[in-house]
Length: 384
Image (cartoon, rainbow, N blue to C red; front, side, top):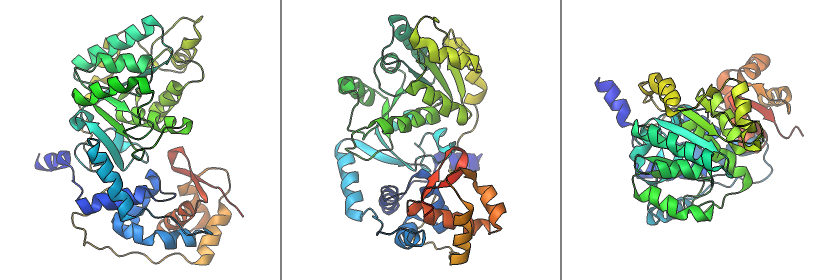
């Protein structure tokens, strides 16, 4: 029991580690997957930061790599603090336990509000921005009943279904996943709703930098947060091509339950949800459908060791294997192509040690020559 209790407490980052983590994730070509691999290889973000320029050069970059400075990180931390927010790291106790288990989970989340809401089991609710009266009413009904049953409600702060779900769960705990910086409310008319969430026991989260204005390509990342935080995702009134279907696909990839509310075949807003039902989503006509399906999952201990962590002390050192030679690097690059492949296949094909393969992939990634795909697959961007 003591071991389980210790895991639930998590490992708090020191101020120095938090600065280094922020610098690393804000540096060029460092995404969540690359961040994880760098920490796993070098042991600490500080050691990884020192190695970035050489890694990028070995990967074939023709220009110096931009590494976020201490000053840049300190300014973002200060701006976030003055705004009433803070960063939560993946190994810390307030990081969403379900989210930390997805592939390439964000190492740092900017949060504003009551972050303890993030530690509760959550139900995602998404759907049409142009919701019907009945769709918005049903979203509110589902959110209210699931909230009273002890679940946090996570959604994307969009118009329509998202707004109805957030409003109905203000009293029980709601999570707003944002596509831009924590200070960039979208749509702007939902600023009062976001204020009510953050001031009333709910919380807003994002992985984007402070001040970042959301663009179209940022919304799938927000959808990924919703799918990752939730144990199950409920889709209400989603058109055949909509962000809600992207969220549903991500939820299925993460092993989450996908619930869909059937709608009229004559309503274009229901084409996507009806399609989900044809493909195996759980027919949902009441909150009880969701609560019954999620009950066995809600007791699962999700507080297992984090996927990214650092030693307790900043002075700990670990031996670093020597870098692969040029012939090893050429062999791996020649084995890759624009077609995504599994890393295990790369290891088998090249005959190189796994440690060498992962390091060369890191070099290519930091040089901007590697594309990472779902399921841990990779492909080459620049074969020249």
